[in-house]
Structure formats: structure tokens, C-alpha cells
Image 1 (cartoon, rainbow, N blue to C red):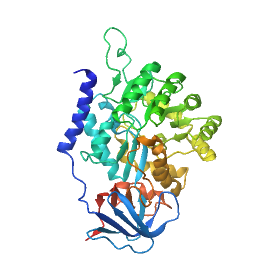
Image 2 (image 1 turned 30 degrees about the vertical axis):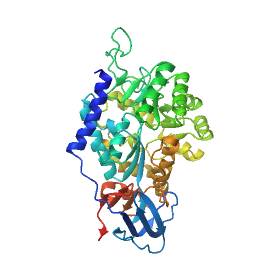
Image 3 (image 1 turned 120 degrees about the vertical axis):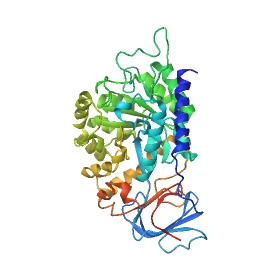
Length: 447
């Protein structure tokens, strides 16, 4: 068995191991669930509507301002005036990067176990869908859908595609290059977190391999990063030809490329060559922001992780220096996003175990957006961005409370559309969490 097969087998066995030893089944399902006496946030309109919602199977079957007669055997949940919202969506998550940083070189079994635990944590906090922004093999998404793991719906990107010396090149400086010299090795790094691809041919292969495995979109590294040790922020990655190759291979499957980048030069190169979603973007300038708006490019930036008060465990002095460098552009970036009406969605990028603090992202955004805007970002706007994967979207419509759409629903204690602090600790603020019509948590039902 070669190294690649061993790593993939290890990851698959890790997922199966979790399913054997730690899975607890979802709450037993009824054929229908009726939410009555709720105030409905549909994911778009900031005005709440008092009413009732009937779920049948995995679908929202009826929404009414007048009482709905429950079908025989239905579970009835009296919201007692609580806010009913679509489930939350994180478009920049990293399930397999939730290990502590000093465990970065651990066995794939550990990676799989922690990823499975992280998936449950997301659902416990009301996140019914995530777009994994690189590093998570599509088999994890398949395991959740098969019921082997408990977690949100996952749109996986597979292994991050990185050039040699790029932000996804996790090797120590003294490590030999895996594809150079007599002893050619495996370009897949970190147990599947990234893959080194240099030149058009290798880029095409790396992207196509991810798509074959089940990726719904492709992640590339477009410039230097904070959490890596050897690539300065100002570096440009990869070449225009390589970017176009990634975009072409993804486009042939009807999907898109998202790219990590901070600087205006990096963003412009990526956008000029067909990338449709920029991750981070904190050092953008106005000319480049205007270009993004003209081309309808998404800038999926994050707020809490780049806050000066955010403590990221395990980062080095060099990481901290680069973090402070990019933090300086946050206010300017968000001002340009608002000025040009650029879609942003709701992404967190919480790694090294910080995902349990995901409520900080809701609160941190309040410095720049009102509560209703944040709620839209975390529901309908993020869902719209995820659906850019076109026919690779195997899950239909979600992210809004609409008849015929997926029944991803949370009930919220508090007034999140006027005071987003209600979601500072979402694990404590959500008495009901439903994904695909299945009740993951239900503290309110009546016989």
C-alpha cells in the first residue's frame, strides 16, 4: 500500500471508528413536526411574522399566520413567542484543523476523531450547514449524511491546492520536496489537508482528484498567510496560468474556486483569472474592491478571528506579527464591502479548537453591522454563496424559511434581530435545533 492509500485508508477508518464508538443517534423522528406560536425570521426580511410552521419529512410543508391542524402523530413544539430562524451557516470552517496546533502532525485517526467531534459541536450551536474551506476529505461529509456521524450538512473542498512554498505547504524547512529527486514521494501533505501542485498539469490533476472524491468547490492558496511560518503575507501564489487551470477544471464540473488571499495584488491576480470567492481579503484597496463588485466576486472575510482581543492558541511570534499586519486592514475592508454591496456571508475560520467560541463571530460583527444584517449573513446570504457550486449541490434549497425548502430550523431565546448578543453562547440559546427535518435538540415538544 502506498503512502497516499495508507493516509486515505487511515482517515476513512478514523471516521468509521468514531461511528462505532461515539455516535449517539438523533432524537427519534416523527413523520411531522409542528412549530406553533413562533415569530418567524425567514432569513431575508428583518420584520418578524407571528405564525406557525409545519415540517413534513425533511421539508417545510406549510407556513401560516393562522393555526395549522397537526397531522396525526406529529410532534408539536410550542415556541411561546420565540424567534424561529433558519439554521446557521458557516462558509469558512475547517473540521480537520480543529486539533491543537502542537498536534498538527498527529495520526490520521486523531484527525478524524477530532473532526467528528467538531462536527457535532457545530450542530450543537445551531449550525446546520458548513462549507469546509479546505482540508476535509469529502468522505467526512458522506459519513454525516449516512448517519455514521452527527453534524451539519458539509460542502467539502477536499485537499487545499497549494504551490510549493505556498500557504498550504506545511513542510518544515529541512524537509525534502516530495516530488523532486530520486525518491519521489507523496505530494499530499498533513494527512490530506493540502496537496502540492506546481504548473498547469499538476494543478489540473489536483483539482480533478478533489472533484472525483466528491468536493463541491475547490480551495487554492492565493498568497501568504498568518498561521503558516514560511510564506510572507506579500507573496503572490500561484501563477496566472495555474490559477486559470484550477478555475478551468472546477468550471468543467460546474463549480467555482475560492482562494485565500490578503493583499490587493493577490486578489486582483485571482479575480482577473476567474476566482469567484476571496477568503479574508483584509489588505484590499478600493480599486480592487470595486473590481470585485463589478465581477460579483464574494469576499468571505471573518471578524472575530482577526480581532485584536482574540486569543489564538499555539501561534508563534512570527504568526502574531503577521496577524497584526493584516488586522490593520479590517475596518477598511468592511467599509468597502458595505460601500460596494459585496456579498460577505458568515465565515469564522476558527481553528486549533477555537470553534467552540463561534458565538464570538456574531458579537464581533456588531461593530460593523446591525443584528438583522448579521442574521441574514448567517442564513440566506451564506446559503446563496454555497449554491454557487451549481449541480454539485446535492441538497437542494436551504437557508430560508420557505415552503418546499429544507427544514433547517432553530428556535432562539432572546431577540437576535435587535440584539445579536442573544447568540453569544448559541449552545445555551437554542432549545430546538432541527436539520433536514430531524430534531437534533428538542426541549419544548408536547405529546
